Length: 307
Length: 301
Image 1: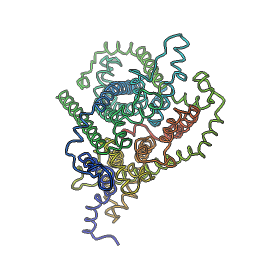
Image 2: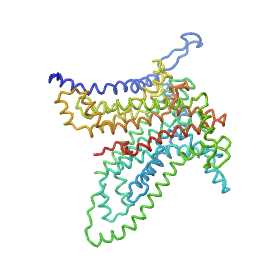
Image 3: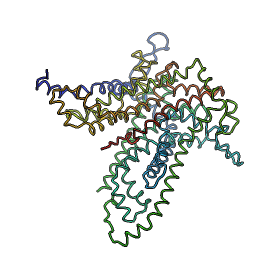
Image 4: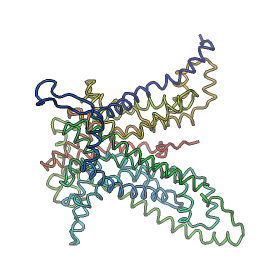
């Protein structure tokens, strides 16, 4: 028997809420609750009563902002942040520059072996970051690296890729290798959304392919570039698995090399959950402020250019 | 955006001049992009080629022969890897397959139904719910990882399969993609017609919307499968028992031990080779009938 009209209208009104129940419940359990709990922890501390012996001698109390005060004055964390800035200053421009270059080359008219190149450049996306770091780590080892082999054969000095300034390049290379392909696809997709007549018009006007690329194509994909920049920045602030992996191959990556490694170290090695929670809240806030600040700046610039 | 609307120069002489020089220029232009892309492809394939070659080398050959010279130890490496701690490596692979396969399946189901609801119904709070779910994309996993672990521990779930599976199910980007696909693929008239026929809302979703959303949902599944397969932070924090490790975490611990026992390096290399082959093979197979562009939300009209 078909439902009565009013009942049908009611189920129809309630249906979308019902359909969203799984997502909302999961969001509450795996996003909202943990974030709330992290905030709560960041304002708490362990208080030791008396000599700290016996049951009840250690209790939790409110800490006010003291955890945040010690996080913000923690020089090791600041050094970690500085290292990440240096690392990000290499990763983001190089990765997005390459992604844009490859996308433009894929979109160029007479490109050969397009399908092969596109798939090959995209392939690192399927390789876990930890495994990528491991593979490159081996390729950086002097006894294995083809770079060292070639330089050695030519009698040139061999660089130490896992120490000093070169370490940043070595780590950045892992991220660039892993991320270029995906960003290339995002940019390429937005390039192909442009109607071909626009290019035809520019060509008839006598624009060279290079001019078309610089003056028509790049402005067209600006929104895609903003988006990829945004996500690359967020990913950069949270680099963890790659330096953790390379740490096994060199002594110059400390256990607190990146801010996220420091959070892990504080929480699970030193057992100071409260300061680790405060640190992760600070990292999250800095990430969000920087990325939204960037989005706002990018948006207002596009609006200015459009007007 | 100022170049797009330039007036066309229609003088016959100008057009002819452009036409005459065009073929030569184009042929040259074809060489440069092809070469640049092949260089990029070589860079991206280098470590993959290396691990294929290196996994054929014995421990001794690894450090003594030229990087890209194949060795003679592949069979030995494979049997050594399988024998390592009673075949724990294959257990890691199965675990990864379970986390990524089952997690991505659940994730796709949740994304499909949420995306459909957000695209095809008008209701109070729709945009608010969508925006809140999307903030999940922006929320750095770091702020989640520690409290997630502590909450799991309180629920008695730390170091369990569920502790890695549950936080992987909600995929904000998957919901975003599913909403785009539902909006583009499910015609309002068909949904309306099914309603007039007296079909229940759930039935309409299952029999009308789901089949046409399927190609898009394959993308959501693949995206989430790769994301879970590649994840390291979550299992690293949640798991202590290496019987439950995914392959990323297993290889990581193996490498850490290798620092003190270089004989383990060949195991790590062989393991890395085997770990990346399934996903590479998957992408090679599916690219015949699935376009990479779908990953960034492109919808074919």
